[in-house]
Amino acid sequence: MGGTDVPTLAEGTWGLREALRWGAKRLADAGVARGEGAAREAAILLSHCLGIPTCRMYARLDLVEPEASARYAQAIARRCSREPIQYITGVQEFMSLAFAVDQRVLIPRPDTETLVEVVLEHLARRAPVRGSFADVGTGSGAVAVSIAKYGDCGGFALDSSRGAIEVATENARRHGVADRLVFLVGDLLSPLEGLGLGGTLECVVSNPPYVTPDEYESLDPQVRDYEPREALVCPDTEGLYGRLADQAAGLLRPGGLLAVEVGYGAAELVADVFSADGHYCDVGTRKDLGGVDRVVYCERKREGGG
Ligand SMILES: C[S@@+](CC[C@H](N)C(=O)[O-])C[C@H]1O[C@@H](n2cnc3c(N)ncnc32)[C@H](O)[C@@H]1O
Image (tube, rainbow, N blue to C red; front, side, top):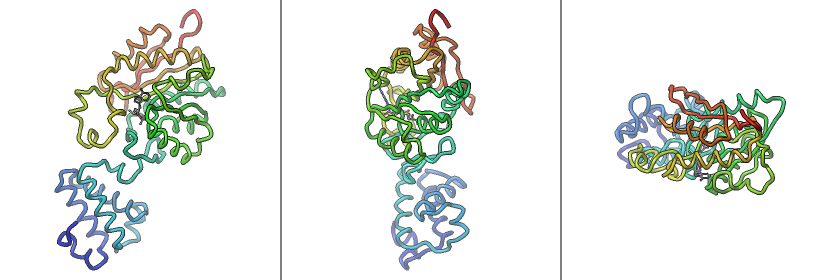
């Protein structure tokens, strides 16, 4: 940040409103956000750099100290480069819980709350029995931690990325469910092989990577250039859902739930994959808040039928 941008910074402090106006203008000039959106983002970044919630920031502060100003200028510069605001603040809310996020993990999306809701409804139908679940591709742990917390149960959080498992473990600690979750690194459900879990899991849930390599190239740079590629891209989506269904069939109890998130327009294909597997019945789909078929689910068949 040049001194000419912020004359009062050279004197050591600047006013809160001035700082907010400056940040919003930089974001607008960079084409990252406009109008109220730019003002909101500037406020989020300033309150993050000050270490106080936005509402208290407006009530209490009129001067911004030099250290916080420097942090804020850096945060605005990162955002102007289109880095997602969640990686700058290090947090994303999901299911009303604050999850730590960094570039090792996908930023949890609101649409994925639909997946958690499908699982929680299944668990509620099974109450008071509390079976365990496996979350495949746990990332930040948003799905696994939410299910463990709201479903009052435990299970396995799996990911092929060691960095993701580290972030998920931290989030489980943060939300008081670390003692109910086992974190393992590996491909899909293979870390559970040999643990003697066959036919015992109540639920297998997954939001796997489902963007094709072609689609990846045309993603918003904010996503493509910052979020982990392995969290987004899958060269063979159909094959991945097929392998997951096959592995899950050996682990789920009869009547247990397999629920997955799918990309736009892919629900029918994935439902067909689950039907064709032969181990599942009651295949269904659930729409997200935007009206898109976002979740495909089915139940493990009981012996001799549905
Ligand atoms: C779309 S992200 C989902 C993250 C998190 N569950 C969420 O919903 O926000 C997919 C995750 O799957 C992981 N992953 C990709 N391929 C995998 C595989 N073959 N086995 C296990 N995890 C995988 C990625 O590292 C990433 O963390």
